[in-house]
Image (tube, rainbow, N blue to C red; front, side, top):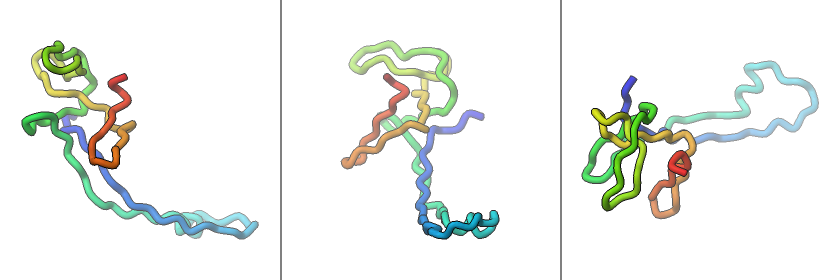
Length: 98
């Protein structure tokens, strides 16, 4: 599927178990609570949508560095966001570029 690259934020709460007896699944599942927070759709400059498709081409460098794109016919920036690092100022680093 050709989805716009996105990042999901999920908040979690850990409740440590300090006992020594093995826990059954339903009791163990209560030690980690996950709550959906939000989804951020990723754009590049000029609000152009990105894609999560595997890159099959490279956008030639001009004023910007070369970046992976879906294809020469679909020049959207292709991002693999699983390794995204968010900086304090809200900017992102995509390790898949390196």
